[in-house]
Length: 258
Image 1 (cartoon, rainbow, N blue to C red):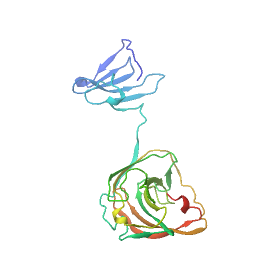
Image 2 (image 1 turned 45 degrees about the vertical axis):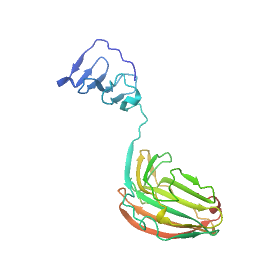
Image 3 (image 1 turned 90 degrees about the vertical axis):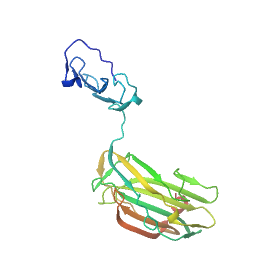
Image 4 (image 1 turned 30 degrees about the horizontal axis):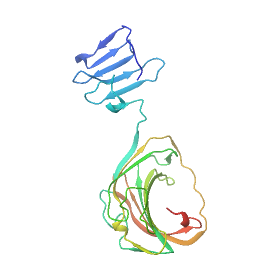
């Protein structure tokens, strides 16, 4: 905050002295019940406008950044959409029941949760969009690790990822993807015991842009993975029930999948 020196001009207090209008300093000072200044709104010629609020018990005129509730100088997280998805998780709803046998042809399993963010249909966030995801509750192995990519020391790799996505004319969606990949040998996976639940998410504002076009699909490889997909709204209510399929990799994709 800029150092502002009073020049002895007019200051006016509001009723009960809760606000002081300092004409000489081009600012408004708000005071808390303990009479400490806790709010400042400043508009000094030649400087950027300033709004700051101190935490209870601190003087906004001398508070350090960590003692402030907010400051217009901060690069703040400006939320435009948020939700809580998956807290009503039930096995067989977010993932298929039973077990899957993986081998050299059927290489892995993917679970995708498409979350309707409520962002305008036909618009997307730009490439710099910021997404905050908090996985608040986990189920059993194998997706029980908080890192994005996990290798258990054998031939099994797990990956957790999320991204903002705009399907054509379908509005903005946040996608949580959980993948399991076998690198060699064979393995049996039980999706119901593996998929995470209880996801809290927020998206920060960025410039909106028009939806871009799609691309072409290449030749298929004869390698496959199992896939579960479910669509929910921002409060976790299912809008399109679970769909379980088997997907064939395009040539060159299965070698680098994860």
